[in-house]
Image (cartoon, rainbow, N blue to C red; front, top):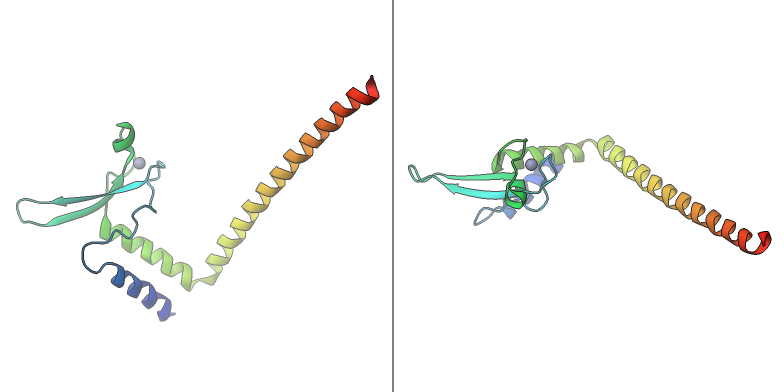
Amino acid sequence: MDTARERVQANVARSSAGDRSWELYGNSFCPCGWRLATYTNRRRKNGATWYVYACSRRRHDKTDCSHARYYRAADLEERVRRFVVSLVEEPGVIGEQIRLHADRQAEGQIRTLLKHEGSLKERRERYLEQYAGG
Ligand SMILES: [Zn+2]
């Protein structure tokens, strides 16, 4: 059990060597659907640096997002890390996700087949109209 957690922690420690590495960069989204962008803010007073993820909606279409204005980077990354560890430690969760994914894929395949069947029926009817009807 500890090994999964240790592996995730070790992986993170390695990737954040040197300058700050944005672990969720490019892979995190605001509930409104826009990607979360990274922002670094240096406070002039005490020199402290703020790292946050924030919705990029405003950057794109100049409208405000109704969700959280920003997420402190360390907090959000820790939440995701805990979630990943919980996935690894509870095999049932992964199994459930795989089953859901398979169900969605099967649904997509069924839809595609039904569409194909529909177009075959149309072709058949056109054929019958052209050759059998006239
Ligand atoms: Zn948003």
